[in-house]
Length: 238
Ligand code: APR
Image 1 (tube, rainbow, N blue to C red):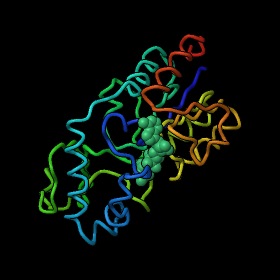
Image 2 (cartoon, rainbow, N blue to C red):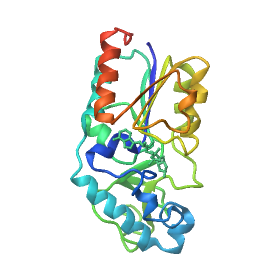
Image 3 (tube, protein in one colour):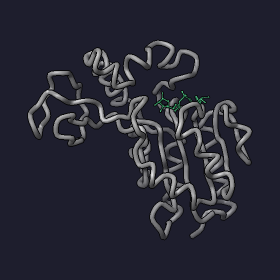
């Protein structure tokens, strides 16, 4: 395999103690996504939305990368791509566990929990504490900050770079995602014509039939095994 694109979802962080969205008891079973994950929800009640992300930011302080995150970092390290995005990790997750495991070429298509964005001057910046409607922007001093995450109805980030990498990849692997949210759920179809496609998940996703290969189980079990096989078979080379 000379060019690899990996897509991850909430399932890869589940064993680090972070909740998924659509599993039983998941986030959307307790909170209405319309209230906390849309621009309209934020306009209606910014305190509710800030507190939703403040709680998740606090949970992330005590979460750590798990062996699945670490296996992907090891795969990237073992594979020295000569060109940009020859190894690309695209995540729907807003946690920083991939980076903390050592992954380097990571794109957060739904934004990042540890960043804020100012709606007045547009800057985005690293932020680890709580944020409130009265918190002021460090650049323009206006109280117009919001989580730097992509809400439903907003454009996901880095799409041109992601689609270009998928169009040229030999291997596309989707890990820990229910394949219910587009455009991420459509990536496997964009890869299917020319790449070998693999699903690694707890249970078959809605897209399972579209993949050439699949392994089901917990991410900390199946991802390290998949990476080990890939490295042993010598498939990963420049
Ligand atoms: N190991 C592997 N997979 C797991 C595990 C685990 N331990 N636990 C759960 N899963 C799987 C579930 O079977 C499910 O298919 O992870 C998937 C999680 O699906 P979702 O909760 O829908 O999360 P995700 O696919 O990342 O959601 C996509 O939806 O709400 C938006 O912006 C949010 O980025 C998110 C997007």
